[in-house]
Every structure is written in C-alpha cells, then in structure tokens.
Length: 543
Image (cartoon, rainbow, N blue to C red; front, side, top):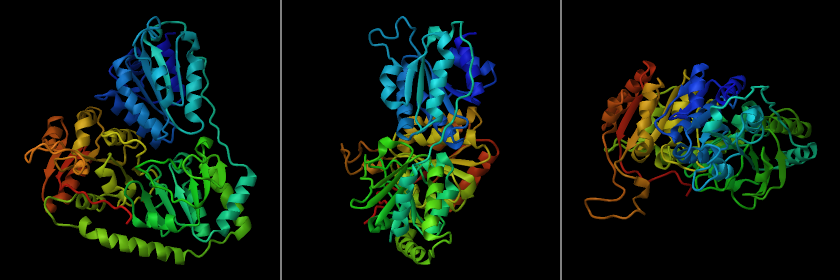
C-alpha cells in the first residue's frame, strides 16, 4: 500500500471525515478518492483556522486535520499552527516535506525543526513501514492531556512509495483526576471562604463539565466568571454569572475578583496575557488544570488539582457536600450584589448600545444583532482588536459552545476561518464572525471559500475606514492621509464572490439588513453585512 493511502485509511479509522488542505499533495487526492471530504481554502492559515473550530466544536471527537505542500505551504501555515498552540486546540497538521534526500540540506524549510516549539509532538515520516507507529504517536498526543497541534512531516517522495501497512487500532483516550488529599484541602478552603469566585476556562468545554460547574456554583453560592475561551461554559443570564473577561469586560468581573478572598481557577491556565483577565495579587488560589506545567506560572497557587475538569469538579462537589451538606446555600445576597454591579455598569453603556448617532456606533450594531438572533442556537466569534472588545462584554451566552473566544495570540482574520469551521461542524446553527476592515484585508478572499464550499455563514463587518484602535499611536503623515486609514466597498466584494452583500449606513436599516442576511444563510448563501461605523475608542475597561 502507498504511504498516502495508508494514512488516509488510518484517518478514517480515527473517525476523520474532513481533510482541510492547500493547495495540493498526494494525500489530498487519496483522501478524496476514499470519500473523505476535502476542503480547499484560499490560504493555509484559514484552513488551519477551520480545522481549529472543527476540533473545538466536536470536542476532539472528529479532529480537525490539515495538510499542505512542502516549502512555502508549510512556511505560510506556521501562523495557523501557532494560533492553535496558543489556544490549546488539538489539530493534526500534515505538511508535506522536501524529499528525504534534501529535507535537511541548506535552507530548505523543515517543519519538524521549525515548529517543534509550537506543537505537542513533531516528527517526520521517513519510511512507509513506520506509518502506523508515527500516526499512533500523533493521535495519542492529540487525544490525551492538554490540547495542541501534533505535526507529522510527510516527505513528498515517501507519500508515493509502497510498503506501508495500516496495521492500526484507534488510540486510547485517557482521563485522570486529582489526588484525594488535594481535593479535601480545596473543599475545606471553598466551604470556609467568605467571598470565593470561580474563574472558568476552556477546559470546561473540552471536558463537557457544564453541569458540574453550575452545580458547584449553586451549592456554595459562588459567583462565576470565565475567560474568553471559556465563555459560554456558564449561562451568562444565571444570577451567579459575572460574565467573561479579556481586555474588555463587564465591571462585575473585576469587582468580584478584587473583592474575593479565594479564587478557584477551573479548567484554565491563568496565562498572563494582555488580552486575558489579570488576576489580582494577594489572593488564595485553587488551580484546577489539566496541565501541571501551568501551576505557579502566572499566579501563586495554594492548592493544585491536576486532572480533567469534569472529574475534578465532581470530586470537589462531593467533598464540599460532605463538609457543608447537600443543600445549596442561599444565593440571594450574592445574586443581589451581582445584579447591582451589573445594573450600574449597564446603565453607563446602554446609551451607547442604543445610540442613534450617525455614523453608527459599532455597539449599536452588535446590540441589535444580539436582539435579532436566537442566541442559544447561534455560534459567534470575534476578530482581533475592536470587534473582540466591543462584542464580548455585552453578548450574553446561554448555551455551551455558542461563543468561540480567543486571545492569547491575536492574528487578524482568525474569526472568518473559525466561523467556517463552526458551520461545517454545526450546520444547523447560525454561525457568525464579527470583524473589522483591517481583518478582512488579511483573510477576506476566503469569503469565496464559504461560497464554493457551501458554508453559509453570516459575516458582520464593522467598517470604520481605519484601524481605530491604533489612532493614538500610529503616525499621521498629513491631514489628508493617515497610516491608519484603509478602505473599500466590501459589500460589492461579497456579491462579486457569489455571496449576499449589503452596505448599511443608517440606524433604521440595521435590523432589516440582519434579517435579510440570516434569510440568505438559510437559503444556503453566505452573507456579508458591511456596517459603516464610527471610529469608536471607548471600551468597557474597569475604572
């Protein structure tokens, strides 16, 4: 059997149904012949971003897999691999490599050598007979422990060689839980705390620990906030919800963290980043995480609970019930405090969310969007910069995995690929990406991929004809031209690519345009709504 055919056979045994790839190699052809759906984006980065969302929304059951050509293909793919590594998302990356005779010669790009530090595992497949063993190691890395990409470099001469055998059984998936002594100590601390806060990360999503998170919060009447990747892991209309935090956040997030005497980080890394929640100092911390390397990395930890978030929270619940009893504590006082902080914050922002100003404020667009869709049956993601900070504090999720948040690294244009991958994984959901005119300049051509691959997403473009976040720091050349100024008619662009496109400039047209855009997606056509907005520089930062 040829190596490429053996790889495809193994992919099918592991449940892989889609292979993302660009632009060509023998593996793509073999996959197509074996009835694995192949999706060809306009650039490597978008293909990896699509695989990223596909892995997230299938919880790794149907892993996102991406392949590309050797040399320049692998070089361009670097950014997408780095993004998945930063967000801890399992993706199988199968770049072609130079022929084995030249793979390590001169300046030929070698993916294993150059991407080892942004992958969980990285190795070449140099001999057809090693196919099963190499694939087994990669899938084991992907299906166990903390998420992240696994890389197998495929020299293009080896792909076409005979001698491979698909002697392969799908790999085991393992879960582990914290030790009993640590659980007992953490439970004692939680039950004794006067003002505890739970900070939930995306580990809640990967472990499907939604019910356990809610049960623990209600048992001890603990407020819950989430990271951006963890957003939608806790119903944000729940009376104990503080919302999610990143560079911008509801004031309740910061208020309760600052006033806390104990923070339980559940399924999170506490990674220190400019786009995440900064943890206050001097607090007692229980850190529940799958990856022990994160302990004491960003925050000083009093108790470490190493293991799967679902198993960890279940053990904590049982231990807390043994101490405090099975009856939930009265949450009325803490719920009233949360409601008061939320109300004071919201009163400040409501005039902007409902403003009739022209040019339209982006907050009005996103507020009308939230009130025009079925939030529980919508998957929404943001792009870097202003769209992220204008959307995330105000969009209230009610169902798991309906918000794809990110921010440890902030590549412009990431949101489009996420929305495309989400639509592929969840075809019955309305899938939305919110981006700006800077982001569409990076990845906008892949709107054509949405049209060609019949992935009818709704793309909300906030066009302020500038990189508004940079207005205060980027140089001004003349009064007529600034280096932040950009432009274009993107609604016409969307129509030219075969999608539905509209440009909206007036308040009264916002909701009707959204409804027409949704109708277009329901009819199978991707839609891009271009809202001409103000250069908004006000964000929900804690005072």
